[in-house]
Length: 389
Image 1: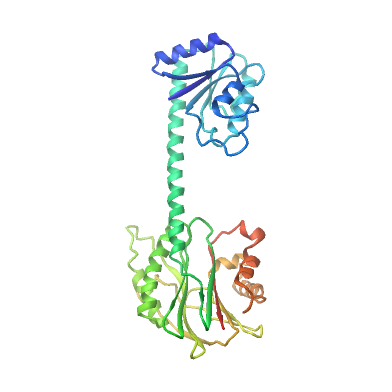
Image 2: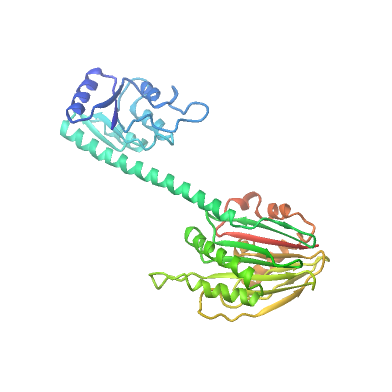
């Protein structure tokens, strides 16, 4: 452990160094002023991070014993400057003060000092306070390192989740794209599509319960099941039933925990000019016709994964060149701000109406999620856009 002792009185420094050495602390740095301490910590003369990228460490300082009253920059100002630096603010500072400086001491504690000792310094008291401060520093370092690893793992998981999503399609008869906005690092929303044959495409949008790490893990399981079901089962009712069957495999030791999800799966058949779909408790999609009129999907039944057996009902809609099909998760309802189902359906419909076929998906994305809407999202948001050519 490296301890920095800061005092303008050389005798005080000598006394404290001797106490520390006898207690087994051999790595001791000293400074005669706040300015000298700033230089030791890699700050400029004003106690600020230098221009450009600041350092990535605290120059090995684990604890600072800081004299309260010093000429020039006093201990309170020094403490405040250190607290302004993200890389230095976790260094514990023990203020050294004369008896009777209670008002100044209160200011120092408000500025970020974690403890204090009074002059003349009592060796036993000083060493006890140092041990407590160093334990606190070790705990903070441990938590910071753990947080760093968690952030790295979350970033990796986010990249894996994005990599599992399909690439946009731009074929002769259809174009498929999506807008994907997780509310946190990871998302419980999922979309997928698969070209069944020359004229048919299977397309799905899924919303797992909750959001964040747990729902993202559930959605990754669903993604693997969905890919297999879309390839082998094809027909909408069979795909949804297979998803429900496989979701029963998500068993937990806590019987009160049950993961479920809503989903809408459809097959677009270009040769027949029809789309067939099954809705499992999911928000209804809509079709913006070439003439600007809108036709809604029907509401679905129970969510997928709640029951051993699930009743499914297949519906069909006619599709024509120029139509734009929009599937989405319930996070889009946050854009219209209504708690009433009928009102939010109508409001979202009016919000989407101007963005029919021919409008670039990027323009739709900017209109829905640009500006202030980028900042606040209480739920994951996913929008799948299918253009019939």
